[in-house]
Length: 250
Image 1 (cartoon, helix red, strand yellow):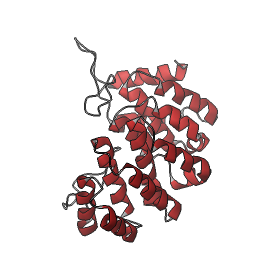
Image 2 (cartoon, one colour; image 1 turned 180 degrees about the horizontal axis):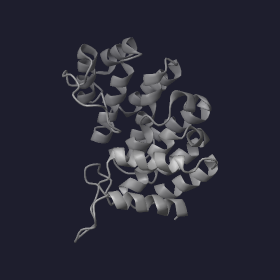
Image 3 (cartoon, one colour; image 1 turned 90 degrees about the vertical axis):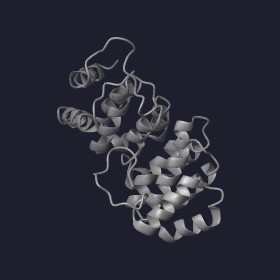
Image 4 (tube, one colour; image 1 turned 135 degrees about the vertical axis):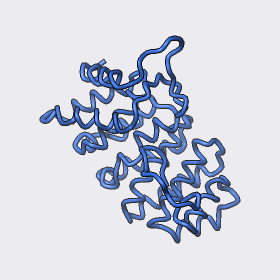
C-alpha cells in the first residue's frame, strides 16, 4: 500500500460508518461485493480535492502510482476515489494511458464502480489527444469477456458525445451499441439506453434513424427510454427533480 493510499484510507474511515459486529459491510447497492464505508460522493469529492490541493508540485506519475494502489484496495471507496481525483486533476488525467484504464477496470465490479471511473471523467479532448489508442481500447472493451469492461466501453463515450460534435465519437458509440445490442444483462441494457439518450442532444437524427432500423434487436428498455427522451427530454417523461449524481443521469 502506497503511504498516500494509507492516508486517504484513514480519511475515508474517519468519515465513514463505524465498524459493526458480524460480516463487513458490503456494497450491495452497486453490486461490487466490496467492503463499503457508506461515504457519499460529496465527501469523497472533498477528500480528493483536499488531497490534490495539498500536493501542489507533485508530478502526475506519482499521482498515478497512488491511484494504482487505491484501485488495488479492498473497499468500494478506495476503488472509486481515483475517479474523483482524476476528474479534478487535469494533469494526472492527461497522463493516463489506455492500458492504465484497462488495468484499473480489472479491479472494479458493478455499475457504481465502473461509472465512477468512466462517467464524466475523461473528456473529448482527453481521448482525441491519442485517438487511435483510445478508440482501440474502447473497441477491445466492447468484446471483453468481463461484462464490467463491456459496460465501460459505453459509459466512457457518454461525456465525449455529450460535449463534442466530433463524428468519431458518434460513430464509435453506434458501433459499440450495435455490438452489444443483443445482450440482456441490466449492466449492458441500461448502458445502451444511457448512451443512446446522451446522443440525442447532438445527434438526434442519427439516433432516430438507428432506432428505426434496430428497434427489434435493441433492449426494450433502451428503445422505450430513448423514444421517451426524444419526445419529452427525459427518459421517464417527467421533469427532473434532483441534480445529477456521479452515477447514471438523464
